[in-house]
Length: 145
Ligand code: FES
Image 1 (cartoon, protein in one colour):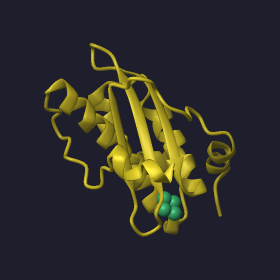
Image 2: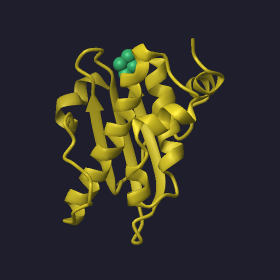
Image 3: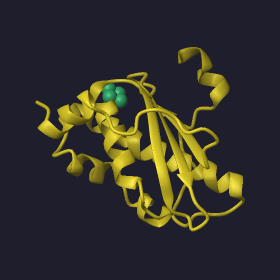
């Protein structure tokens, strides 16, 4: 059912944890399954993502897609990171079962929400980036962690 890559990223997730004083942080959730994903970004003055970490409270595919998403955006410019779509994450994982596609969508949304937070903090606009639909704020989720 799951590819070897999915199993690998699930059992040995990359970049799990958090970044202190991140340039941007985004938390998103899926109301149906209740899974929550948070992505932290450290972005330098040249708008390059130096560090990316995640914390996921969710299913195995959500862990694998967040792990892969952090790997894909690390070292990229903001512009390049925006191209890391859920499709790109799924391809990098050699696919996901159709019932798990929404997990990869959560990864894309979490990266976008973290970039949005960065843009808000910097007072800049990132072309092509839209306000995240399901950004969850710290206070709302505190009890769940
Ligand atoms: Fe919802 Fe995986 S089942 S994120």
